[in-house]
Image (cartoon, helix red, strand yellow):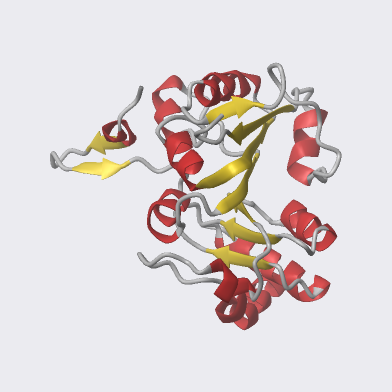
Length: 239
């Protein structure tokens, strides 16, 4: 099993630093994204801290909480949240234009069950999310990091999946979708080897009809790439 040290790398100064699953790219704000970001950020974005979140206080209810890691431009996130008002959603993203876009969706759809944290997801999970408190993780089309030397940056692998499992409530699920088949196969192996998880299906999952198709997904289909889905759930210790 991989150790926590395998998510670290040694820089030229000899100091080990965390390997991130993302690279911050300079994004271009549209006028509407910037306006939504400036007007809505302080209301719907939760500051990063090293204190555990109180979901009941944040959302004003005890509904289950689903965390989406890397929501991109947030279109699918907003649709899912609007169609499931009985569920609370927490999106984690570092791309500011995407945050601005989703904030605009929250405003335009009058969503009350969606919040955002603009920070590194692994640090958020480690420091802000209580164990066994999450109903599900959604991971839609994360960076596949195609070159072998970059595999260490992939989100869906141990020990990152161990951390997500730690945060899941018993019966909660992790739903991973990618248009890069080698990553799907890699993810299937890693999730199958993650203690506390079991596959809901025999291999890849069928398409979940409730997940809306995104523009990014359509680009993959237009390029004749296969869309692969995985659905794993946390088993109780008694199981």
